[in-house]
Length: 390
Image 1 (cartoon, rainbow, N blue to C red):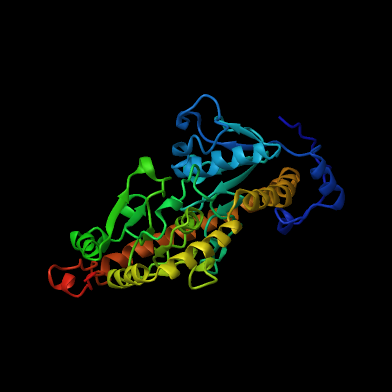
Image 2 (cartoon, rainbow, N blue to C red):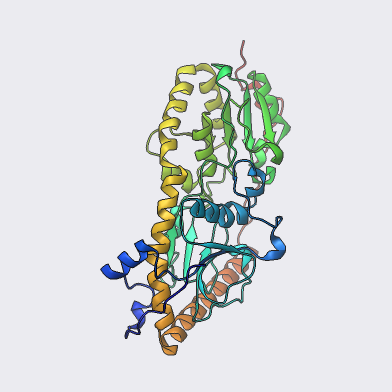
């Protein structure tokens, strides 16, 4: 564990509490790793399925499927292997910079004057007492309203998924297997209806919902379809991991209208976007008939995948911790009781405002007209509109 030398006391205004940059001297000290505070990645002991932290992420890829481990544990291992001074712990430290997933922290837990709380928000709500949040969708750094207090930093999800097996090159131009990777509950209802699978069969395609034990295996997959909903929801707390994995796996992707995907899109062939089950089938028909387009998407994905690799994400984590969390921790420790109480008060107000917003939304939901459920594809009329291979 790196020892911590308390900084000298300096008078700060409340606005400086977490915004004072490191001085040139402090930057050099940080780079020398001499005066860093202890930096921890925490998962409660009773949630750990191991006694020793694994050192091979790819060999233990299934361990990193749950969000807590995909974020907290994977980030720790990658930083540690890169020589970054940090520790993993199953016991909540009394002091230091503590990085924790939102699911690992009780709602009422509040950091002391010796603890700086960096919350990995992932696809959860914010924690009311976090000093900073890490989000994996760029929409997460935008204010939700004029009363919103955010100290959020965008870092993309680690990519590719640990242990990813790309498409087998020996498949060549074959285009047969269309797959969804993920929990089936996260698949649009229209794509779970028997008529959907029947429509693909009519096109000479086979539909696969990949089970959890094979989420890393794209070897026999020719394209990915991943749509949570056709109701134009932008899913601002979800990451673009399904897109990243498709790029790394070497398969074209047909995706929904999600903000994370759109934020990554710089070319029409980064992925194809579907707004309905009918459009999804039309896009699949285009891919069936255009092997050159499929190859162009694969080659484009290979280029784009270079933007989502552990080296880039490591730098983002280092910059966040050294450039933001370390100076904030120094300021937090030397802040007066009045300054810290102001922080607690502001976040208490935020918590109350968000509670009112949630309650208002719940009440509104009781009185607004119900949103019609997605209409499943009907057979045989619907299937009659689908072109066949004949």
